[in-house]
Length: 123
Image 1: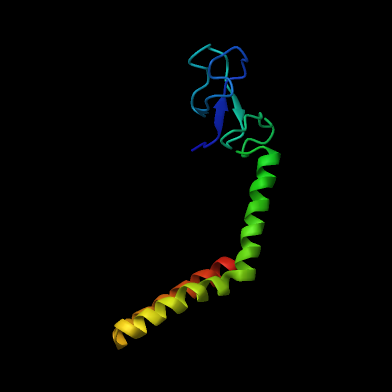
Image 2: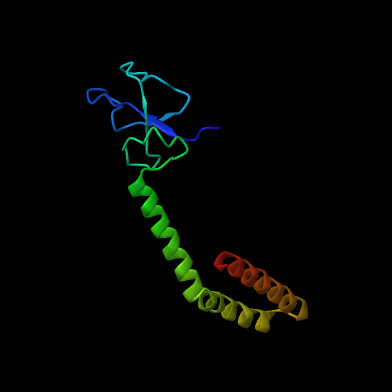
């Protein structure tokens, strides 16, 4: 299924830079102009290159998405363990005060699951 978006290139149309259409629609419902493929990002209406039909985002938006991804991975590598410890230590203190051995075991298993998920995301 093609998940790219189309938009009307007619500057006089009501839908120009206001609405994006499914890739199955070929003509604008308002003015009848042939629709063109545009960037899938919410407020970006830059036309896509026709020679690369697999692309959904323009080069600028794709670079921004990659930068955000790289920053998130770097943050997870740098502070993922500290964040997990900051959340788990208070939870274990509550378990010590109010819970029995079963509660401690469940909390320990929960932490193991969190640690494994974080490790998988970092790698």
